[in-house]
Length: 255
Length: 253
Image (cartoon, rainbow over all chains, first blue to last red; front, side, top):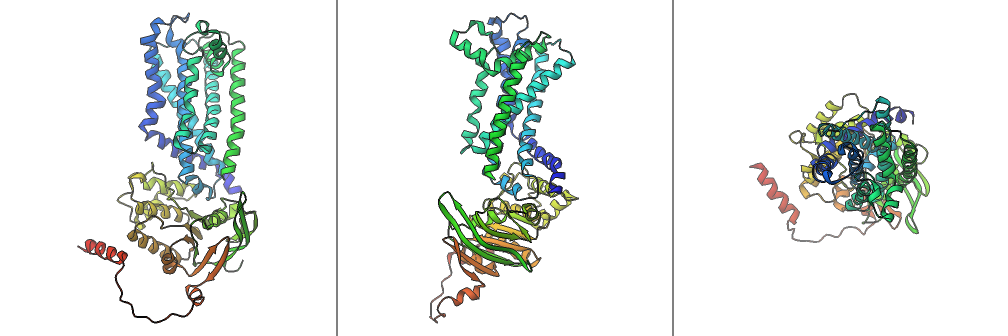
């Protein structure tokens, strides 16, 4: 048991290296998690942007938080996909019959999800900078933004883990992410909620994406974050804890 | 424990209300090849999964290399290796990367060297830097077995190692298994092919309806049947003989 514990982090590192290779060798993954959000950003800023009134002079600044959330939501669907394939192809069984900590397999996937999403978020922010994104945020605010994004990634990653471990088919393992990717559209991510019909607006204002987007936007523009950040954190932690518990249960049942 | 690599007593396992293993008793001697024979769905894989700590039994005991699978699974995992029914290789990684990955997970000193040696031994050097998804069924199986040998486990489980392989590759896989046993490794294999058990195994056990109904050497099992009758029958070559003869000729050229 001791030797297994001693090697937990190096084993997880091997798992991380493995799935990062999977990502780098999959053009499909790179296009979906990086190029699509960038294309969407270009489309909204240069095509629709002129017609959208947000009350800010710089639409890229307004749009960026929502684009980042879409990138993360599409990124985590690949975590479910990779986990599903590992389970289906017997790789997990191979690892489980070896003297390595069983959870190293799962944590390797979770860590991969965080690392790869951080990379795509950084790339998207760089492109946004070229498109005129400017932020007056100080280091502390940036750290808070990173913290919220990582927390959001972890929360959705554990949701993805449940799906990947319990799905019966590849389609099932990835389809769950479409509603997640769609959520930012029915929030304040692209347009202010004021113009929406009452029912839609009620939904938009009370779903997690709006509070997360508002919190990040406030941090980036050095506005007071108010209560939004606490609501955002509550959503992230809530989803994280519940999905972690369910994912672990699904994982143990598979073993 | 004495000379037993595996010792199983009264092993029970049910899935929901279906009793798969009723009371399995078996013993495998160290360094031998043991074949577990049974039809599809007889519970062969269930036994392998329990012995390789992937599944918990409902009752009975199983000792593998001196470790109880229920209370000392870590010890069991240190000393075994499992090759499942479907070649569990990472298709996106190359053959070499697959081997290096397992060597790292076994915490060996020189993963690269270990990989090189195994690639050579299994005739995969030329394909070493191609993705495993481009491998043929036989190459994949070889890579799979090579991955199982990393870290020199004392006991290897081969769950239906030749199911779905063509006859040529099958004979190749048999050669590998024989070499393993010659090197002192205990091999526990399951199969539904009678000739496979006949070719390879020192001892054969037949699993039927949740219990071992026969267990012994090939000669022991033959004694269970009436003595052979002498009959004169014209021996036609089987299609397998013909197939292998033609393939062999082609390769000689």
